[in-house]
Length: 263
Ligand SMILES: C[S@@+](CC[C@H](N)C(=O)[O-])C[C@H]1O[C@@H](n2cnc3c(N)ncnc32)[C@H](O)[C@@H]1O
Image 1 (tube, protein in one colour):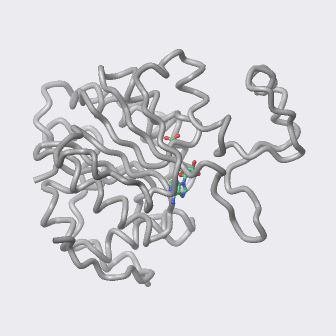
Image 2 (cartoon, helix red, strand yellow; image 1 turned 90 degrees about the horizontal axis):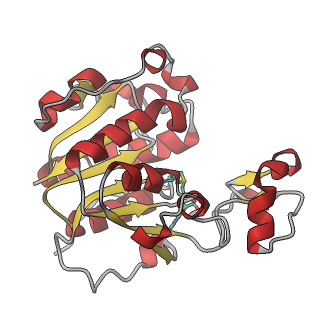
């Protein structure tokens, strides 16, 4: 039976979660997860304020460390975009990755692309555009067919990726046995309804002892960024349920990552 999750309401303040949230300093992840090796986390990131955070610079060492220690054989990622997160997993483990993205990209108000390059950035990707035969537009969506997974394809790692093109809420996962995956990253839509739907699927499909990670979870800056607010409040509003399914469940400080081990 599917758990009955409450619909997420925005939080009014951080204090709601502070008493319940387990916070693990980045240099102590190994203690919580039982890894022998401590993370070599860059000092520059330790000194970066959370509202100046950059996933590729500041969260990537944590993702790489988690993949290289957890060593998944089968990994699931909600929200591929250009495949940067998938590359971290592929380079740090022997995993085959299944990853899901909307085929024609996420849209904001007035049908504007949520992820895009503008004209000045297009020279950087000119070779890729030529290779896939796309004539650049003034604003080029980078999370639609042709761009989804570009980075794992350019790295020659496409032989270990199963790309799924759909709204993750409509993903037919009935062919997968419960516990099929060793790990999952939830990093697709930031809307509460989708975060919860992706979380439920991850709980069904990740094995006991498997690693589940949510990106864009960061209570101290949730009021500053819509995406962080969407993800953080969706999860916090279902905190009890999450804690029933995952233990330990902890925010890595500093980071925009919530992590847990499937019970
Ligand atoms: C934050 S980006 C993913 C970043 C990626 N995980 C990485 O590490 O580089 C979010 C992605 O989720 C996709 N997305 C948004 N809503 C979605 C949905 N309902 N189903 C599937 N993908 C979705 C967007 O198109 C976008 O590419």
